[in-house]
Length: 328
Ligand SMILES: *Cc1c(COP(=O)(O)O)cnc(C)c1O
Image 1 (cartoon, rainbow, N blue to C red):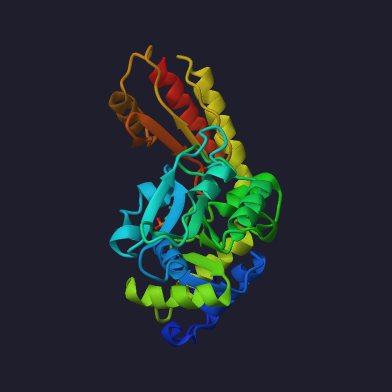
Image 2: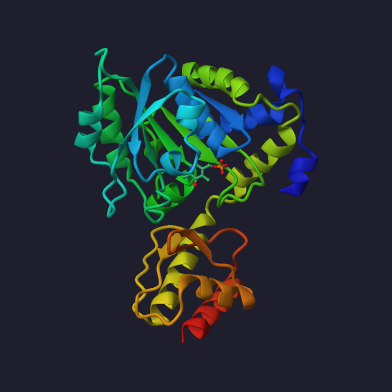
């Protein structure tokens, strides 16, 4: 990855003259079956600008899941920066899906009492609901139901490649029902930075305008786009290893006792320590840390592990041993 960065041809991307950025954008657009792509430093900015593009007039509304990253972890930027009102619907915790009829019933038309529904969004894989995968059938049916109401569908695809690998489908197949997708290069794919928004030329053009207002463009950004290209070309298939490793780790936690229930679907596993456990969450995390294993509290008393490129089998064996010792 470093050598790809070192040898990347660059130019001024503010003028659309960086060949490496252009290559990354068009590569992802074609992988996802969309017309155009736009490079961003972060997924938060890519989501925001993509949604600002869809909500290009005042009193616009987005419909989205109440446990989505967009709702919970992007500081409400949709409202504070994008002037977008959000209508939040609960996901089914088993499937991580907002039922299609609930989405459709949530659409609000041209009545002066209401904001106008300009876009709907889903998250795939779904972070807070455990790395769950939303299948292509759901996305295409939802996309079609919304399109019948003139509402485009956006996918927060921070981990969309995890979903593709898990389902063994191409990004274009999985995202055919969506008008835009925000793709993170910096999560499991292992790039230090970067996200790409893909969609129609029209939507990407509007997102480019929004990007300027939301912090500006970047100049010789080919240096970091090269890392993203390398990640997409080399680090996608290996996501299956992350999924397998998450499975292994969850098995070890279950074996460690106390009836910990944990079942990963992709590379994330969430768990809480059950009531019968002698340790509280803070003590568990401290003991693990003393032994060289970092376990993060995600929210409340819930821990999250994420397996990724820099977690190897040796590290996993160590983590499994530490969990068993600490919980004993
Ligand atoms: C990480 C993440 C983002 C935002 O990405 P940043 O690059 O951290 O801004 C958006 N959505 C989901 C589901 C994420 O996990």
